[in-house]
Image 1 (cartoon, one colour):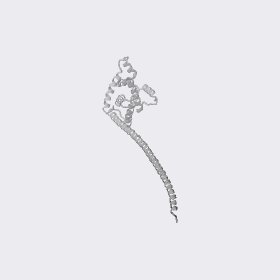
Image 2 (cartoon, helix red, strand yellow; image 1 turned 30 degrees about the horizontal axis):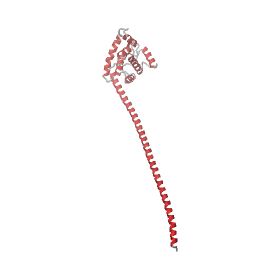
Image 3 (cartoon, rainbow, N blue to C red; image 1 turned 180 degrees about the vertical axis):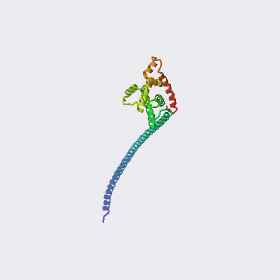
Image 4 (cartoon, rainbow, N blue to C red; image 1 turned 135 degrees about the vertical axis):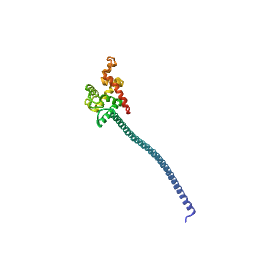
Length: 252
């Protein structure tokens, strides 16, 4: 059995050990708490960065979707515009067909009528000419007859003279154009008329140049020649009257 002194010595020794153990435990706890706080801060920073990165990626995705939608809408607009242009062209062709059939004595099939109407639309736009004026000129030149040929040698629906044909083919750089072909003849006639408009500035003088030649217009304007040939004097007012007729069909 232990005496009092031995018991005191034992308790004292173990008390010191206990205190040492408690001290070590406190240090361990503090280190654990510090590590936990550090880990929590790192996790918080990581989450913050992740949220920021996710936000950036979302913004990029949103912009890409918006860009894709914009591109799709743009393509839709282009298709829609093309459809509207095609509808407008078909409406013009119908008006032109109606205006021709009601103002010509020339017999023609539907295919020929369509070729004339489509060529008038295409080349009047290409050379920035009035549709009603092109139709009026064709009416006076050939009465819409693609096979017309004058005593002077003028050929086709817009009555292209041989020398004028050579000039136009050279100027356009297209020697293979056929003056008997409806499309080619209207192409050449519109090209030549647009050139006279650019040269002389008025529709009336351009018509005179088309009918009697640009040199004749220059001579009359310079008073070298008193007046135009009788045929040219009649030519202009007849066409102006036809212009009024074709405008009644809603053609510019």
